[in-house]
Length: 349
Image (cartoon, rainbow, N blue to C red; front, side):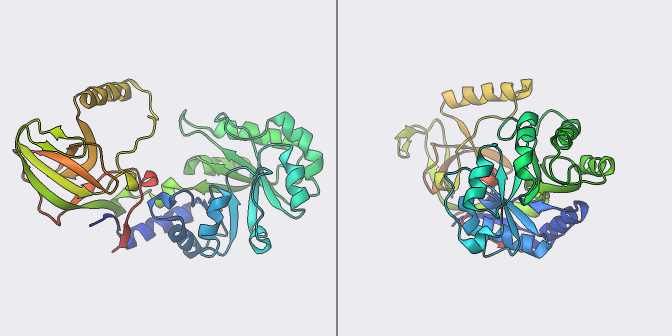
């Protein structure tokens, strides 16, 4: 009676190993809900892969992985003076991200031996320092444990290899210690782009930070199911649900496990803005105006509609009369975003 992530263990582990073998210097990203697996489980798997560093999203996530992974812990969110004090044993394993010139003196005042990377400002424009800020900061960097520079690239817009090389030119111009023979921590370059970068900059140590393509890269190894909790015959005009809706026509009310507590029915803003995507948004808006909203649950090979907004731990689906209803206890497929779903169980075969 749960929302379960089923994992073909052998196939998944084979995929993880293939990604690690194809990406020297791999830094697995273990953040948020651990891509549906939980951060602790992925930390143990990263230890199994034999990598020396993993990346977490925030300082609060360190406690979920520190006892499950034996290597260094890179924090992707930039350090700020408001960050809580770390236990000394943990602090020695942490690599901080510094994205503002004024934060480096504050970090080193608090932790003189702190290891850190300098984040560069990319076209994503989320965090990072400009070339001018990097040059101004260089004199205070030369006697500190700098671990390299970090680049977080956009997902859209084609290849960003040229942008990375322009940023590396800025690093060289800033005369950072050992530049350009330094370490680049980078997200969202393809395998081919990484190979090209290494060929053009042989003195550079490239550390690809990979999350989605590592943990979720072989979707055929992963399946999500929910349990059918109840099935009720529904006659046209009958009232049902929290909000007293009436059935639009004959059919069945199918109650399945999985609701807002799992992330079911919660949406994020659309990431794509193409013509087809806009048309789909308009179509969904028209359906919702009629009280019809697609759910992530599939029954009989078709995506089914919510009968009403999902409850906290269960959802009510409407199944037309011409569809064969499932039986109580059956499992139905769920197609959801792994990074936004809290599974009750993760089962390995």
